[in-house]
Length: 291
Image (tube, rainbow, N blue to C red; front, top):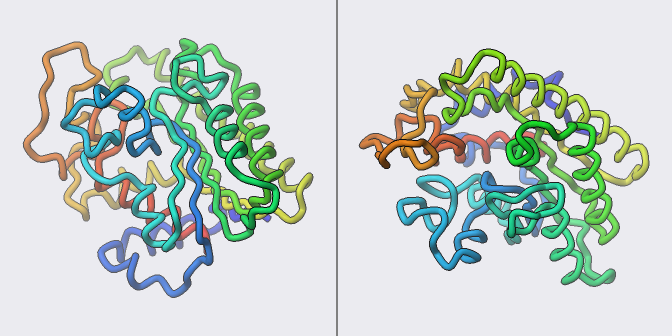
């Protein structure tokens, strides 16, 4: 059954953040996964699109081809789980059909299923699906959340068919908080809030349907929207993060490139992506949700 954080969010985030410095070493249980599969966009891409672009994107001041200034949550989580990381995520994908010349969710999953035989034991594999809204961004915010989530859920079924039984499925945070949208018209920000709320409503329904159709599946449904708010408002200052509104690097802005001198004090590395500190906290939250 789904391990949503709706009823125990407060206790989890207090553990994650109040004792963050020692959390990863002190947490009393060890999930038994030997492989971590990642299907995502730039929030999970640790170098795939960089290699696809022959080292031209993201720029060289990003960390090892990932979309931040340090290791992503993928590296932290796989390390903590002592699990082999298989990362299929590509920055800039369109979850609908991958028509942006990088593999979308469907292509990412097809790559995985093509390389795995039906005899492969995946009972101790954890699959993470975490798209951050490219379907909305690249359709000028006209994509229907029901369609977006339906396509995503079909990908879960393909991975399930190969023998994966453990799925970590975070929801979408409030994308209107991204620095790239700072100063936008109130009506546009309201549209973004409406999109993420409808997306999460559809996602919750899809997870319930997936579980009902596959009684042997285990879904860990992480509340990223609540995490985002709690972290920004309550806990970030304890880690020395003081800027929640701007990106350290102006990569996606229509002005000359600038990079701040104190990235550790920024919640966001650029207009779209979290800083390395936040990625570390995301991994801690994901790990806690597996208990």
